[in-house]
Amino acid sequence: MRVVIEPPTWLGDTVMASGAIEKLVKALRPRELSFFGSKVSLEVLNKKKAIVNHKNFATVKAFPKSDLFVSFRRSYFSRLLAFKAKRSFFFGIYDGHMVEKYNAYVDTIIEALRLTPDPKLYAPILDFVPNRFERPAIGINPGASYGSAKRWYPEKFAEVCNRLCGDFDIVIFGGPGEEGMADDIVAQLRCKNYSNLCGKLTIKELCEHIGGLSAFITNDSGPMHIASAMGIPTVAIFGPTDFTETHPFGNNHMIVSKYLSCAPCKKRECPLRHHRCMKEIDADEVIEAFYTLRLR
Image (tube, one colour):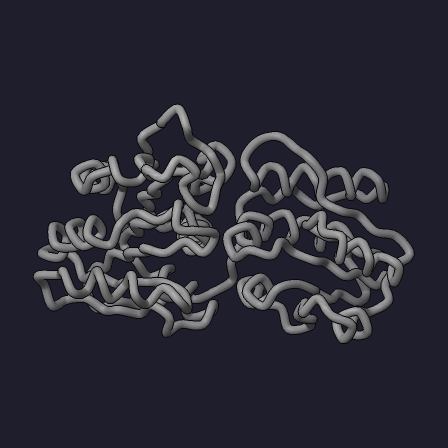
C-alpha cells in the first residue's frame, strides 16, 4: 500500500499528533510511505521521504499518487490533493485534549479500514538525542508564533531568570523573528550564566537542546509541546488559549493562568485591548509553580 500522510501545520500540533501518526503507520504497515506538509512539521517528525507544502502548482505536481491519503488538517488545498489518492481521510471534530483528538481520528481510520492495530500509542513521540549541559539548565521560551496575545512579557521572564540563575544556567529559546524578545530579556539579566539561542537552532537542534534541560518555562507554544514529549518538567503560561485542549500532555507540568471570564478568547491579539490574562501573571506565580515540579 502506498500511503501519504499530512501532519498538522504548526510545530506544537505536529508534536501532539506524532503519537497518533506513529500508531497509524504501525497499523497500516505501508509498502511506500511519504509525508507532506509544512517545513517545521516535517522537520520535527524527522522524516526523510517528505514533500514541503508550498501551496502552489509545483506542490500539486510533486504530490505523489497513492492508495491512501491521510490528512491531519481540514484545508481546502489538502482536499484538492485528494484526487491523487484512491481513498482519503481528513481530520474532523473530536472531544478532549488535542493528543486525544488526534488519536480518536486515527482510531476511526483504523476502524474504517478494518485493520488490527498494534498496542495504542497516545503520548507524543520525538526521536532525538538530548543534549548534555555542563550544569543544570533551565529553558526560557518567551515566544509563541500564533500571535502576541499568547506571549508573557520579557521583563517578567527576565525577573524569573534573575531569581533562578544562582542555581541554574539559563538557556533562552525562540524562533526566527523572536530575537527582539530574547534581546529584551538579556538586557535585563543580572547574571552571566546564560545562553541566547533564539533564532539560531534548527528544529532538530531545538529538540535536542530542550531534551537536555532540567526544566522549561514557556508560553503555550510549539517548544512547550516538544518539552512535554521529551519528558521535561514544564511551567506553561496560558492566557488566551484553552489549556484543556493544549496543555503539556502527561505529568510533571504546572499551568499558570488567571482564569479570567474573557478567556480563552483564542485570538491572536487581545480583542479587549487590556491583555489582562498575561499582564496580571507575575513572576512570583511562575516561580512558585517552578518549585512544585520534580526537576530532572
